[in-house]
Amino acid sequence: MGSVVRNDKCRARWTAYRGGFAVLALAAIVSGCAEGGGGAGGVGPAPGQQPDETPPSGSLRSYAAGLRAEHAARVAAAKRWGLEKVPLTPPAPPAKKPRITTRKGFEVDGHEELDLPPVFTTVPTEDKVVFLTIDDGAEKDPAFLRMTAELRIPYTAFLSDYLVKSDYGYFKKMQDGGVGLNNHTLHHPYLPGLSYQRQKREICGMQDVIEERYGTRPTLFRPPFGNYNGATLRAAKTCGVKHVPLWSEEVFVDHWEYREWDRALHPGDIVLSHFRGPDDWKGTMPDMIRKFLNKVTEEGYAVARLEDYL
Image (tube, rainbow, N blue to C red):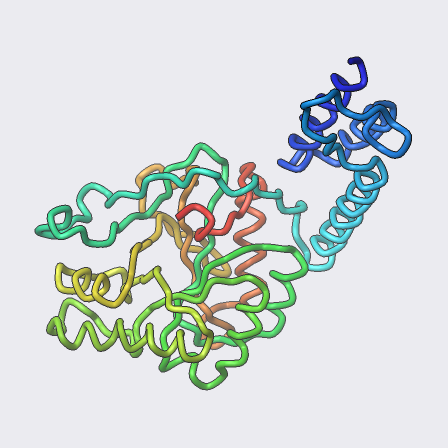
């Protein structure tokens, strides 16, 4: 009976460990589970009970070693890219996604009645995370891809075809690294100045481009300049869009801009930036990422993937 209790405890510890406990806790887990049954030569479960699923202690040790190596690589990358601190690791994606609704004051006529996609600037969550989103696709800096990959920083891209078509392959590399590629229209027009049909061509046309080039049809759409009207959202829904994320903050290479009066980060905030370089900024995209990470890390925020919360 004692070994069964130990095995149950080991399984609980393994579940917790898989959920994201720190590396330092793993040594205790390994030790405790190695003492119990369930492995080769251990005491089997009582009749009628499920077989022992406690992972072998070697698996825990191997995984702990992997986590330590990953952390060491992250520390080295932070130093290599000139960060003040190592970026924080986000929690596991929520098993139950938060309910996304349109921010008050951002509605259009008939928003609820027509079940139009919600327009929002922050994801409702208690997790101390923010979401990085990057628009258009003008700058195609290889160093940016290396930096975000080495630091394991997730982000979401919103692309316009007139800018990305000069190098579709650059954004394929981005997608291969786990980045979601989403809709920012074909030509980046001021949508409220267009008819419904022209807006639909801009939005559905970009859906077609992304599906053809990258094999997925986006469900996220960001209107250029953050401007939209009822026709925009009706067209977006027709094109298969489920969410219209805007932003709470915008980060540049040399400063931040804020939507809220308190000029502060909040859990679940969506942060905007752009694919830009020295022709438009006083620096590079890695400079922007450095500005972004130094602030969010100093304030205790991790960077999570927006799609994991929607």
